[in-house]
Amino acid sequence: MARPTKTSPDRMTEIVRFRVRPAEFVLIQQAAIRAGKTLSEYARSHIIEGRVVIKSHRKLDPRAFDQLRRIGVNLNQAVRLFHTNKDKPPPELLSAAATVERIILEHIEDGS
Image (cartoon, rainbow, N blue to C red):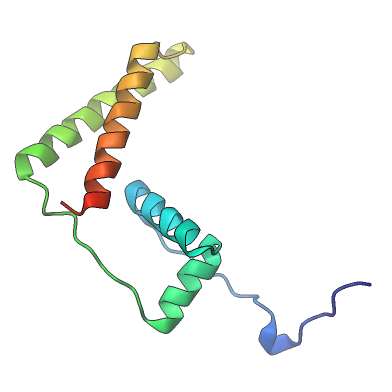
């Protein structure tokens, strides 16, 4: 037996789009998983119910932030070089990028 069709007011036909930073996206995904909801369900409930919590990650020491920015620029340049040369990145670079990502995500999750 097929599922009954929803009436017009119950159908979700509209799309809401907005941009977030990659680190913010990861945090939203993790929160949705912890809540046992899909990303859409989680975002919709928070927007409609007005329970959006805005955390500023600018508590990061300016020198540390600048160093992280520099590391990101260097990684971006390395990836661009590999894409132009059609080479595979060396394992050391992949390991370094994973380490940097882990440290950043831990720092964001700690809220410091």
